[in-house]
Length: 267
Image: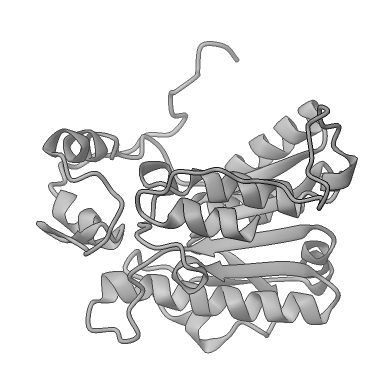
């Protein structure tokens, strides 16, 4: 088959939807039209306009099996790599791992839905229907679940996760954080290497559901290096550089919001 890039293979009906304000809230930029205090999303009208314009409709059936088949084929072609996923891409990453041996680590920013638990062990929070009318947890055979113990996995969640469900569109993300922590605990007790980080608890503030629209990339790149299982930092060739007699390294940074400072302190 040729010339099918960007096209669907099934007939779908696309209905008009004027729901930008809803997604402004669900993606935790703020409560429309107000931004959350300290949020690092740009407040310019132009940036918000471009943000909304990226919300394109699905032009076909959402099929995670098809997506994961495609990614597995890609990893088999390019070889060992780290899989970075985000949001609805989270469940794609979990499924792809079961189909290829070339995923050596997963970094997932705010994964939503499709969290794999052993058969009969999905927590109660994972059985609740989301606003998208789906459950967060899914059952997989124990043999598949054990595969998640074979690689390092790190998961990040950002700010403004409420403790109560007064605003369901926000609390949905709190529930996902709870579930991912339970998921990590189960895997780590079986010998896994799963870390779940709630960024405000580490001193990194102001992040929405979108790291690419905030100022998180430095931390994200840092985590990719830190979770790589193939090569340690000591093994990476470095150019000759002057050192002090005390063996200290000077890290120079500029921090407008405090996030870069927190990353520098971690380093």
